[in-house]
Length: 181
Image (cartoon, rainbow, N blue to C red):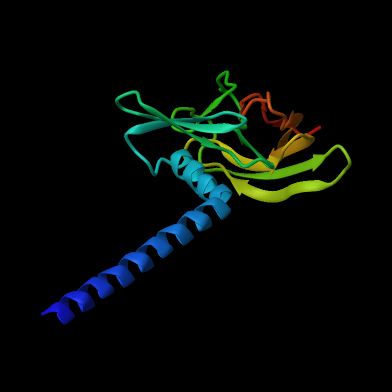
């Protein structure tokens, strides 16, 4: 009987140690993949995949608010800046801090040619991107830089400058597409 008890306790210790080891490794992996996880979380809010919460994003954190008003914040990557852009033709709204769950742009699920370069001429983005169901195109740009951006669609385009410094806006709703001249 005593021998069975020792075997059971030994087995339980092995299982407990294995569990603690896996939890510790999981926490290390979460810290290492933190920027990937936060980007996925931002993407899920932006695409309406998470309900019963609202989410906004500043230049340095994601702020999630539950229905009861409680808030949780998540730090954004130190080397990347989130900005969401809603090109428009006729209607827009003023915005500075992007509401991932509330802002609505005019041009929903449409493709745009997006070209972004830094002031040194390095191309950061040069691709066709599709706006989401909220009419916004989400971008992660290197921090602490100024960029020249061109967005084009069907012979219309808009050019502007945006930047990714600590006090910059995460919501850009001022880019009106016009006939290319």
